[in-house]
Image (cartoon, rainbow, N blue to C red; front, side, top):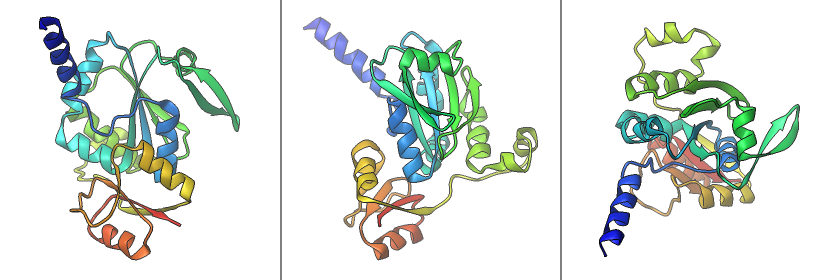
Length: 224
């Protein structure tokens, strides 16, 4: 009985600070980002990485960090021992990798290492090592706002910013609609619930989608 209780305490302590939108699969993260027209962040991690746990427990628990991630990003934490396969496009063709090979391809020498991807799935930049909320917030704002197209990060960081995300209706086919509903922990089909602007709401009705957008929802998925 004592061993069982200790095990349950460990499980609770591991999940208590998990980000609700966290994914664990590379392909799913990039596909969801593409469908929802969001950027993707892949956190290359390791089970024995104390700084990975520190990032989860501290940075990911920051309310402002969570709002920015929910509004404009798909976030995944992956591990080298994952037995699934990952597909990444090289010169226009999908190359299939094992997860250890994926770590090699992205040059992961230590964890955590964060890779940022555009909505099209192209690698944008990477960030090795632990980063606290105070430093992570301007980074995800800078990339989410695409400010890099007109200024350096140093210049951006010197300016005040309250950017969280961009409200948008994304029209999708039935296959993508079902994929979002099945795979995004932040997604729900709207049937008249209280509106949380950070939920990825799905609807099959144009008027409902526009109502949700007017209410300030950051991402509305509309079945075309």
